[in-house]
Amino acid sequence: MSLRPEEAAAGLSASNDGVREPPASFGGILRSLGPGLIIAGAIVGSGELIATTKTGAQAGIALLWLIVVGCLVKVFVQIEIGRYAISHGETTLFALDRVPGPRLFGLNWVLWIWLVMMVSTIGQLGGIVGGVGQALALTFPVRHDYERAVKLPGKDEFLRLIDLEKSGTETPALQALRRRIDASGPVGSDILARLKANPKDELLDEHNHLPLLDPPTYDDRLWAGLVAVLTSLLLYFGRYSLIQNFSVVLVATFTAITVGNVIALQMTREFSLTAGELLEGFMFRAPPSSGGASPWATALATFGIIGVGATELITYPYWCLEKGYARFAGLNDNSLAWAERARGWVRVMKYDAFASMIIYTIATLAFFLMGVAVLHRQGLDPSGMRMVATLAETYVPVFGEYAKWLFLSGAIAVLYSTYLIASAGNARMITDGLRVTRLIDRHDPTTYRRVVTAWSVALPLLCFVIFTSGVNPVTLILIAGLMQAVMLPVLGISSIYFRYRLTDERLRPGPVWDACLALSSLALLVAGVYGVYATLESKGVLAWIGGWFS
Image (cartoon, rainbow, N blue to C red):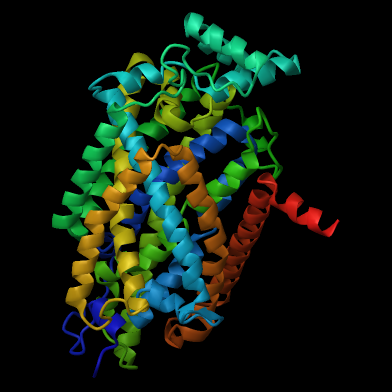
């Protein structure tokens, strides 16, 4: 029996010499988990630590419901795409290339959307390696330039103080901002006076004409560069087991610390959340806008990243294939034995996906509640070169002077986990894209592995170059989130197509699962459409288009 190229690359064998019976006991299933743990490691760093905490800082408790929905709703699409991978032994991009629709230059419309998302995702990793560099620059300063720069509040904090003072209401956030700016001394007072006179003041130093608030720094770039080189080396020499084990240790450690921090915050008077406030978070309402920030825009971008984002939905089957789920089921020879094995490995995959969902949901809620309880109440918003320094403030109420070291060690762990895993996953996706477009040999697994290795080395270095361009790392991460929000409904529609048209009938789920899959896909569609609308509106594109018809 001959193999299709995508089947050969997935590790299937015409002789079925890799076939293995699925575990029957719960302990055996637990020992077979792994792909979901890798995905959890990729998720916690950018979506949970940065975007979710930022959403809590901007919107307050009002968007708690969206955070929960964002974590729970995508897992059904994730499993359906994974089910197809086991059924056909086929990678995700080959599968998406089968979705009906127009083609441009021979490439399926879904893959064109994926290509745009892929470019933005590389930018996202530029933001993440920047976050790792910032954390290391604060932990192990070399020239101390970055450490000195972030001690001054950011321009957005000065503008937020001015905005809150105009409202005439004395809020805890206003008081906290005033204390922080007063602590910056004469320099802070001078900056505040200049911005009150002219909010668009570029705030250049009169002597050297460098920015007063965001001067060029080198410690964060030095560390980010070293991290990029280290990652390239790890991915060159490492394989699946290294990535899985590394991510499990890093994520488990920091998630445990973070959950403990949230519990400890509940025992303080100033930062505890009442039952009434938590209930308010499930009122399904829009958050108020404050200080020019758009909590809805951040929330929609966060919805694209939190839980399994579009990138993780696409890469999850690659990790399932590398773990061996499809190889263990064997090549589909239409026999009853194959169907039984495949059903068993699909069941293992479900355990894997739901276990990872529990992990990242707990982590997501913890980060969001910290953003609400600490940053929102103090008027802080993680952004730019102060992203990591601001996030560290969420640990200060509980851990005091040790907060900096505790948070920074954890931030380095989870951000690096995301950077490592996402670089590895993206290398596999890009290589697969080259196979789908026939730019490399589709039939040779050796070529596939060599190109994966080449991209694994190149991507971390490319992400570092993007970070050194000076783009705001939070902006890079949120842009990627919006692009993933666009891709999510496409994946939802594709998963339904796989379910009803392509997946082997003997592996198809029942009506309850179908209903959950439909609701999941509908939620992704609503979020994606509204995300595009909100983005176009916020940038004035809709008003510009309307002017042409008025």
